[in-house]
Length: 459
Image (cartoon, rainbow, N blue to C red; front, side, top):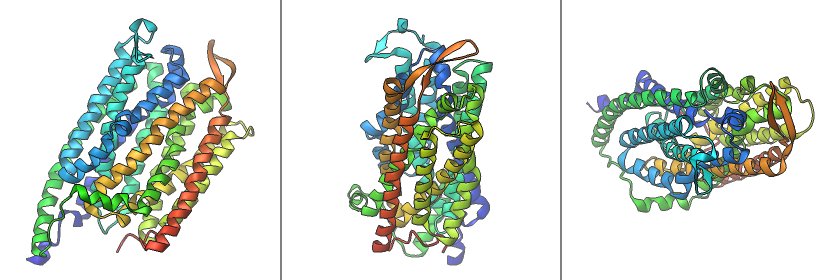
């Protein structure tokens, strides 16, 4: 009887990989909407009269509630207290609400000053930003929930591979946004990509509800397994958070995450504009080069995750990825080889770096923090990360508007501002340098504390 109880749903390869596919599908469409407007900066400038500062404010909104109202921190504690089912459904619902508000603002609110201003920001920009902020609460907390789902369903198994695949599928959503959004806008309207994403996120919500049925069955089996083994179920208490905030290794990972992602995600927001301004590409195809970055994740992140599962070397993988990140942004900053094929090569290298670090970083957290606190731990990391995701695009937008306009360019009879991206690329390279130093510090801390970051995950 005891032997039978030890076989739970997550011991079935088919069951745990099915669960992964479902939650990854949901996250993919969340990532699509996250970057649906990233390749549209030039189009927004012409059709909606958005400045680079407006675009920066819009992207800054991603952290309004998550950072300033600590919604990520609360979300993590709610996740540890209520579990992945209730938290996941609630966060998916928030994504739907935020996506609708964002769509409504772009489709129905006048882009001109006649619609008025809210806190000195044009109404359309402000309402779209509000929708994006609400959506961000949903998608970031959903990301934490999905990460804990994988840690739960793949405990002691292919956890890094599973997290790598989830990241890869999510990045597919980003790649589709970079490629498809400009084409959809050319064929329809500026709001159509947002409507498309809204429908698909709704489908993702339904898919997550299906996963919840599987997870409920697993929980019953885990309770029975614990009772058979005479184990007590671990309960989350607020006082347990001290175990996280006093952990030096945890904070090194959190800051590494902040610096690394500050050099990648905000760059993606402006990458299409970079391709247009530095490499002379048309807007309808400029998004294809940045799309190579997440597309590379489709193969590389699961590959490196599988390598970490079997061979270890998690801290070393993060060092290599951070070093590559520095080289990429320096090459983008240098005034050499301004050809699309060279930009494509650099983007592929960035895609490899973008695969290396996440494939090792996220699966390393369960080696440092107990499972019952993983929701809060990931939430705190995401909160720190969101500081960069919000403020860095705002900083870059301000820099472009104040210091990087070097003239005008005419494309198909339309006049656009000409930007020099040297200063922003240097800023991104500096983030990479700090990330590299933190990666070395993490390896040193691992040797001191014996977390096992350099050891394989599969036991």
